[in-house]
Amino acid sequence: MGIKFKITARDGKARAGVLQTDHGEVETPGVTLNYTKALESWGFKPEDITSAKDIILLRNTFWMREAGATAAREAIEWGGPVMADSGGFQMVSLGKHLRQDWRGIGFDLSGKEAFITPREVVEWGRDAGVDLIMPLDSTVYTMDRRWWKFIRSAVMTAVWHKRSRGIADDRLYYIVQGGLNKLARSISLWDARHQLRRGLSAVAIGGLAWDEPRPSMYNTVEFCVKRLPDDKPRHMLGVCKPVDILECIKRGMDTFDGIAATREGRHGRVWIKGGKHFDIRNAEFENDEQVLEAGCDCPTCRSGVSRAKLRVGFKQKDRESIRQLMVHNWHHNYRLVKGARIAIVAGTFDQYVENYLTRAEISG
Image: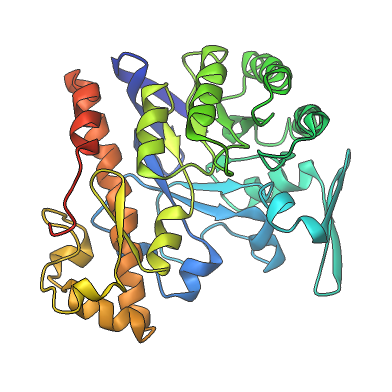
């Protein structure tokens, strides 16, 4: 079957839909669970989100291949949809160890040299049972001042994508690159439209959420959405902070991924309503018997564990306490998009955003 998408409701540019895959349906707007090496090492399991439904589990092709994995669901209990990103992000995070050319990317890690081609990325996704495949894309740090690098990124992404076709087209996305450079984005969007007309099922926007001012991010998203077909699902790569999710939904985006929620939890920062957070290490929580957030139905808050107890556990580097903070933050985003969907269907999305952004008191 591959990827199929149906829009079921609209409120302005915001839309609610259903994304169909070979391993189940996902209601949109939606967020992925990025099942990273960090989550695994801290004991975070997919079972931690069993109270959530229709979730996409995201795995990283770069690291999965490095580990020798041959199946996207290897070593985990997960029957739902899986998305695999290409590893393009590693071009920035591991830039000193990577090189790229028109054939693909090469890397040297711990003395090990290897090379990955665009075709190999998609072949791995197909053979590993991935439902939603992100191809190899050329990524540039958003605030890089060398404008020509964004042009090169857009063109290289187009070349690589052409070499990714004919393998698993029914599960393949096109990734629009170009940073904040409108010319680069226009080049990428031109090729994206061409590929989508030729039967490609989905599109993603990449290359954002790397230190650029928020208005610049939102303007770029709006610029891209205006130039993309209306009937295809749109994924936002690397964007998962609550305020950013809402602003991008408002501009017509459907699904989101990113590691900020669980990463922030791992560092003791607790997300609460209003796009706010507090630091569990602060002395004010030493005797605080409240749950992390009043009214939250995440597994951590439902368990009744107090801020004071989690503070002690975090300061002692207790793995269970850290896992509970990560679980809370991820569920915060999950509840956010589920509420957004309900509001879109009811035609009250703007009010929903306003209510969410109303300043929340940390005291609960």
